Image (cartoon, rainbow, N blue to C red; front, side):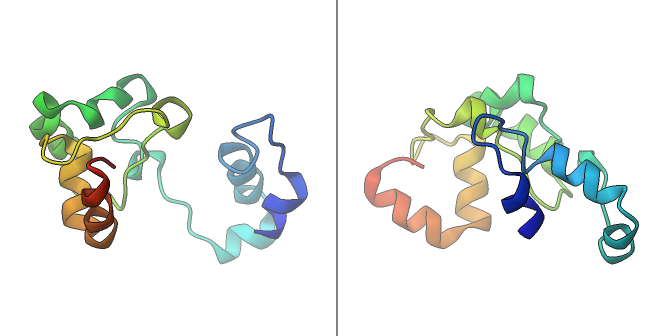
Length: 113
C-alpha cells in the first residue's frame, strides 16, 4: 500500500496495478515475501471480452472460463458504466449472488449491481 501511495498517478489507470506489481515482483525484498500468481488466475476473461460479464446469454461460457479462479477481474476501466440487472441471469449477477451475498442483497434493493 505504501508503494502504491508513493507512485499513484490518477492519470494512469495502471499506476497501482500491473506496473507496480511488475516492479515489486522484481524487487528482491518483496519477491521473498509475496507469491505472485499467474495472470490467468484473475484474467480468465480478457479485456476484449469484458461485456460477457453482463450478457445473460454468456453465463454458461463465463462460468466455465472462471471456474477454479481465485477471483475475476471486471475490467473496471471499460465496465464502470455498465449495470448488471438483478434477475437478468448475467454472469456477474450469478457470481455476486454466490460469492458476494451481502453485496448482492444490497444491490437487489437498487435493482442492479
